[in-house]
Length: 486
Image (cartoon, rainbow, N blue to C red):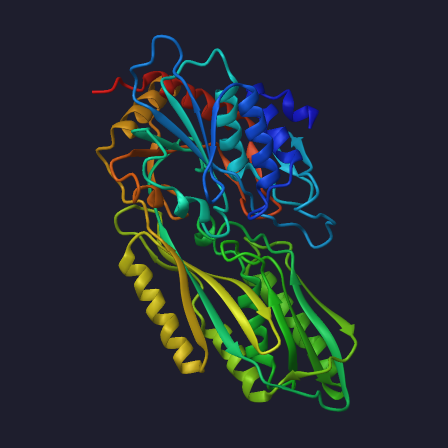
């Protein structure tokens, strides 16, 4: 961590090192929240924890800037907890092992939490500075952004006085975001009926590992493998011919992360074992050929286990495999209005086998409500055909772009003045919290900026050191240019 604290800008990186040292996965942010609250009160700052757990910290303007419009800098407290299969790490207890690797900061076998820890660190560094110039300032740190946006849903009218919001959750330096996708969770419940395994069988666990995974909004268009879909494909092609009986299917861990790993517990007749081994080897070779450019480290493994007490009945197994195999996944449509941006997507994020059912959790994202509605309709039809149940929950709105946004114009011009080149004005397919803030604060002017973060929501997550400095310089310059109240 000492290496991080010496990076530029030091106040930001010193805070990020503290953030890494305190566990803060989604729904476990309280220790970090309490640390920040104690620090802010020691600094004499106004601190409020609202009823859902969001923090609002207020700081007066520096001398001479009291009449500027109030700005709220916004970040989320939580991080995505993802790790490599061979990494021993408890996200609720263990610190993130961050380290410097050339031009990047990475983590040892886990997600880094630069999403959104760098943005949070920048806000706290500004709060702690006696030298940075700014008008009246508020910092909003929300909880549970990655697992359901609970904090953003809970933000109430009147708690913030700001007219301008700067969201710090973007992940590409040189891009200014003025809009984002909305989303909704879809959860299938596929009935499970069980029977005793047949005689003369051997039990195995078939696992797919080594995929890159990543953010289901930022990376969905890159064609990466979805471990859940790929294992479903194998079963659809081989389960009947090889007389495989499935005892459990589990894969993925978050609905907003592309699944990196999945496993199926199964039995196979002893007489078919050689054919199963051959089919696994051939399927691995096929995937390595098809996904060579995007998934160079994928691996299929077949490990013998003890025979399970029960397996799915043929009818239940057929329903499950067919539903998983036919369920849409990935990019549904690219945007006509914003070149290169995904309009609508679906991520089959988590599969969990339970006593009486198999649950499949997906996340639908879309820049337009009708795109989201179309995918919901498709999944409803699929559930009806399969005799399964699907429920939709946690819907959150997109952030409608405002090309005439005054704060976007300020950020745009400031970037040009500092770096002598044009930034890219963007709409992002990921879900930022800005759309939810528009409900209690419909007139708030919003913009989103951030440093370059690669592979968020996966253990390969890294943040580019140089761009953190650029983001910091841009943020401070924008704060100096905020206009006076009208």
